[in-house]
Length: 302
Image 1: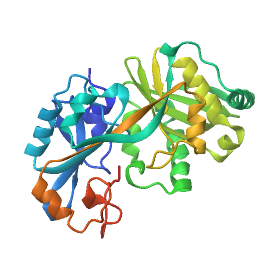
Image 2: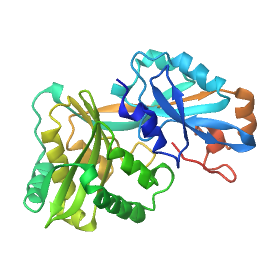
Image 3: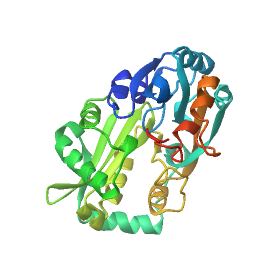
Image 4: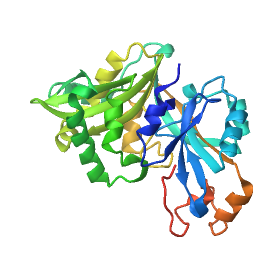
């Protein structure tokens, strides 16, 4: 069965990134974006691209090339991709971000002293539990809207309302929230498939931060996602691999191992790629013609 991130419906909920392009050889969809000269390229959906374990990676890349695309770039994580050797069909598959995982197959888990204290403090002030996104869609949109304003989020993180409406009706989406005097002050969305869960989005109000409500929310999630062997809380903040920042430390306290996500890229039309990248500064940014250092740069960065 196709992972929720691989469905056409999910891809359609990201119109601010691109238009859906089916890759049946991978059992997934990517998003197609315009570039200069009337050309297009492809990018994986947020937050990772699901590629079936049995996928014919080369055939999928051939389909993208046959669609006239200049390049493709996407992020994959451990559980939702083919074996590493199959990824050699890309020009590169390099480490991207360290993900923090709670892996039940490793045996009993105990919180460290800091997280025990924060969870106990939060649990005494908020009511944390699993809730349905459809029942709290407006509350969630306001919650994420505050996060959007506070951090001035742009690019892929500027989600349209259609994205959240889709999530409220998408199989596998589970939501956990914390309430203080009836107000939703923190929430975390996960997308589950089989025995695997991945963090999708989380947000808290100023009051939620003060109460440490996110600690209670994640504690509730670990308790109720007991049908998932692995829960991927994702990585640190920003586009780099920040493993020492506050968000990374917060996630690490709920995890018992880490795994490296991979950034995969492929030039599909070399002549067009070189022409578009002619003015790009030397760097490892891919595709080079979308580098932030390029003149009049636009488009979602990976």
